[in-house]
Length: 378
Image 1 (tube, rainbow, N blue to C red):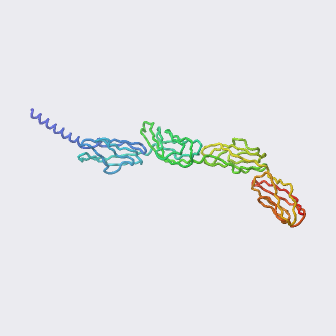
Image 2 (cartoon, one colour):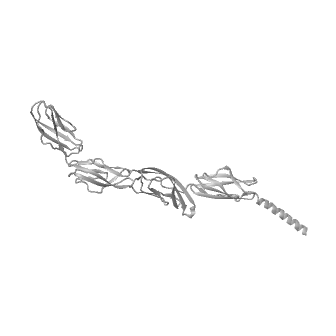
Image 3 (cartoon, rainbow, N blue to C red):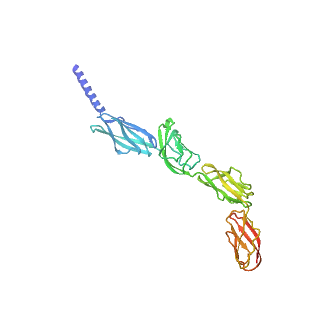
């Protein structure tokens, strides 16, 4: 009876030894692995455990491939991790081989499913800025509800601007130019069903134009002559919208397009202050100086007498006007002419007598004055 009992014990021991041998075979912890789905832009980590054999264990891709952006890293003697951030959606099959220190091996097929990106940067471009004008732009994300931390990872913002962690670019630019930089958004999901950290990056170019300033296309006006002038902006981005901040000379008005219209009624120099806003909302008060001159008129009352056959020279004087004069004469004595630029009569009268002729002058603003003179030639 005891002999049979001993045989049974020996048989059980042999069977137990056989099962123990199977349990100790080098293999993956998961015989039929189903990696969790990855996602473009999602920080991914999937541990692969192994057992038996002699340590350390090592893994290698025998065929197929991991999703682009993911790689295998050993974290201890018998555990590896597939980690990284997938860059392409799709289904990727990889036969992963396992080897131990004795070069024993095992292999298993791993199938990785990568979903399309579910969170990313929504802002596609940044509006231009202007030197000296306050600037603000908010970076936005889209997709899985998340709290986002923003940072510049390469390049630099324009001087005077900063990026807050909450995603607002703000400040006052101090220099004109173009700046290219890369922004990264790190999003932590607030939706338990879509838990995880998601990352997206985008390159932006922010143009900073010169400081807003203005000048008059024509800084001189004339009493009684319709004004032909307008405010011309430099810096910023067209179109511009204008409004008056000071009182204009009597008879004049400022249009929203910067045109100055009307007919001045009084002479004098005045400083016009206007408020200009460019297409991006940059705004500034600018001041320009407008001079209103008296109406052009010929001031000479008479001309000195001349002598036939002798050289003659006389200047026709004016008052007021805006320069750029053009002179002409009609009916002058034979031998006399007028300089079109200076209004000087010169020449040598050929015959004696009394002559009536008209001198006409026009200035750059279109004002015209004409006067008839009587010239005695002895």
